[in-house]
Image 1 (cartoon, rainbow, N blue to C red):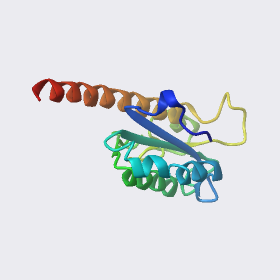
Image 2 (cartoon, rainbow, N blue to C red):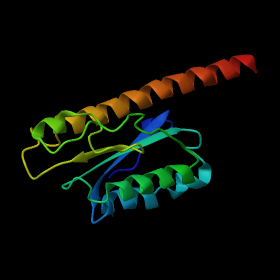
Image 3 (cartoon, rainbow, N blue to C red):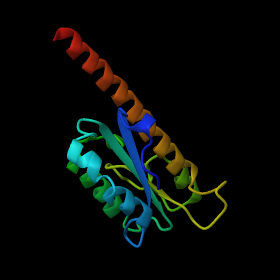
Image 4 (cartoon, rainbow, N blue to C red):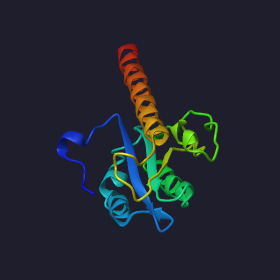
Length: 156
């Protein structure tokens, strides 16, 4: 996990990602969170958009706890949270069900399951599509947010 570079200090949105490890964020993500105190006290990320994704080896793996940790982290920074905006996928226990977007049924952020297979086959297509959809949703929201800020500056 690295700190944001000078070029990245004023983003419109931040998408946080962490594996779910032992039921929570990974140690490098926790170090990033702990290292964000300067941004916290400066309110550097206030009113920025935020979202998150996580992956673990099992379908649950306590991924919700990881996403909740990241949402609270964003809220502490005064950020505005963007969820998936998706209904749960039509879930079933067959391999065909792994192609459904939001197959794990998360609203707060993108969840994925990755077995110990090749990265070419895991996470499954539906999980990758869910993450892609979340990224697109954040990008659209950031464009609207940026456009609204320009409109507010013009009106002022």
